[in-house]
Image (cartoon, rainbow, N blue to C red; front, side, top):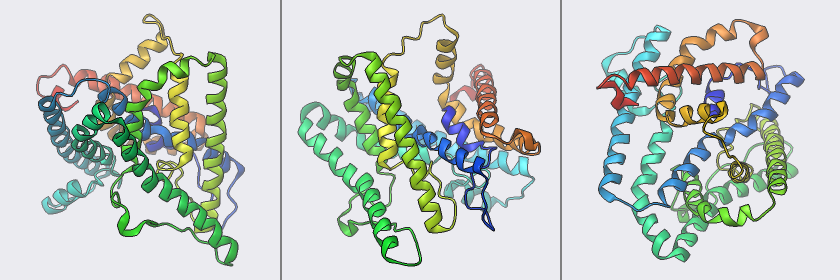
Length: 351
């Protein structure tokens, strides 16, 4: 959740392709660091799969939950659109309001609710996936492998094609598209989310094997994977930026890369040694944020739009460390707001 908020509230310079060229070294450093943030949404998909696949399926409860998410998404689209218009002084006609809500770019020209749409799509498929997961694991693994091929594999094919084309052509460009053409059953949707979701379900069975590895070795390997893969994602992003002539968003475009996939698995491995301790401050902070993530997710963009311009107005605050602290303050404000909303009978249904 913190990574999502750091991404959306960015107050540091990561534009490595400014007009006229000559990006400062700090922009490149920030660009390399921010690659780790590409794990933010994939981790949510992964955690959903981890929790859902390894408990009995109550179809009626699952359908109610899916329907609730659809209603919440539409309601919050309206709230965010109205809040964004109010905070920016924009005027929207009733028709424009409805169109904006349905199109999704509801606040600051951003569609933060796309995740809810992808999650609902996963939940539609989940009953079938759960049956295969429980009763025919080979079929389930085949499906996951096929989905990975058509998503992460397709992205890898694009990367190889980009390198090949640019090696032979004088004018560099990015190659993007559907390499499998009509044979790709997942074109047009965020199908990489299915891979993270299903891997989350499978990961429950990996815990014993992972814990058989000595903790210090597992931690060292996981940390090394995070360092190397984040660096490779940053390096690939710099290459793509140079090829396209504009800064390549290594977070949004990194979701379906092998680099981010490896980082998500490394983070999962790192969490296995977390003992917490119910009385420790860290545990209590993790617990309160984790139990309020849905509300934080819906509210954080409102706090961002209301406050970000004041941070940007002070140049000395526009750096990566301050951006992290600013995101933490937004999360804290959201937690307080969510807890207050939960005390109100009707509004608690929203969070």
